[in-house]
Image 1: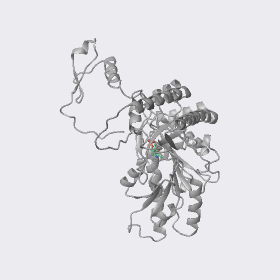
Image 2: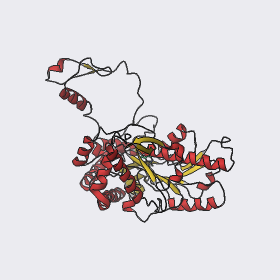
Image 3: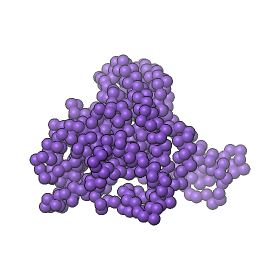
Image 4: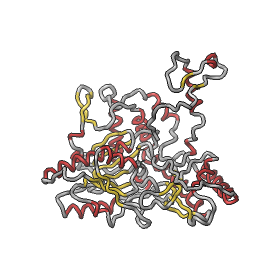
Length: 468
Ligand SMILES: *Cc1c(COP(=O)(O)O)cnc(C)c1O
């Protein structure tokens, strides 16, 4: 998680050892102040590299949704294009065209309709996509509500979402002064509750967010059902509401693996969708996408013009300058894999997830919360907390000894007495690694069963690594 950093700790060691054996070995460098003199590239490289030496091994990190492997040709083209500024459409018109092609390719995957004018842009990740989707809903709501004569300042506008939302929605609500109306999940409704969701909607609702799928468990909200409910609701009122789908992880998975699920622009009331290119889009962070089914859902006020080949190009972004290399990496993947390639990769990941779920179920002490049959996310809890002397946190610690990062955490609000452990399968976690993981997990459980664990006097809730 990107930190917000402050003044250095006075007690901390604050010098770097330059490279052993080199002529600079006897000059210490300050960690927290600029060195006075330059060092050679080789020395700088070694110093920086050595600082990172004991960071976790990304390939064993089963906590993150973010891409941890791209093939050498992909990283080559990305390294070669790092200097291109994505916002500078006039200097890099060909790069802009690749971004445009990506938007069209994605619109096609998400069933953009022929008789409408879809629009979209790349973003830094899904978070920026959610901000832009949310802002478009806020501005569009304001225009509709004003026309209908509503006193738009009488109440804070609200956004309806299940309590399984990712933290970016809380940021959106805070940054842009929106009330986040959360529909509680419970044991029976571990995604957006279709029996109650419409009770949360009123004339100050800017929109409803459906999630494909929920970060904590991998479950999908039933977007088709939500679309029906919205359709019925909109018949009864002038204050129409629409749906934004947060498909951070499902957006590049469902089109290949579950083409029969209706969740995208096939559904009339889904007006915008975001997804992370750096999750199942298979690109290194950070890249995301947000698309609208029609330009009429993107208020003019949110569009800014930048110069482009002597003319102007509309843009929509929170950030301004950033490298275009991730956009180019996304386009590379589209060209390289094609539809069938993506499908094969996702299918392999799915098979690994199913294998893990089957093996974990066989161990006997776990109950599955998500078995990888949709998103390749395995999520499980202990059947009986008192049947063993260890917790999922102890198991997570034990697995960490072999380098595996498998977080344990409580489910969100209303379900937070349930503690789960989650494994996110990604393309670079192959079947042979999965076999090794299961062997390690079995051995760790055996070890824990034989151990006498001394815990803290008060139980602390550990939370790590589940929001991305
Ligand atoms: C990961 C995730 C996000 C945030 O995505 P980033 O690409 O990391 O900004 C938002 N919503 C959901 C459902 C997610 O899983």
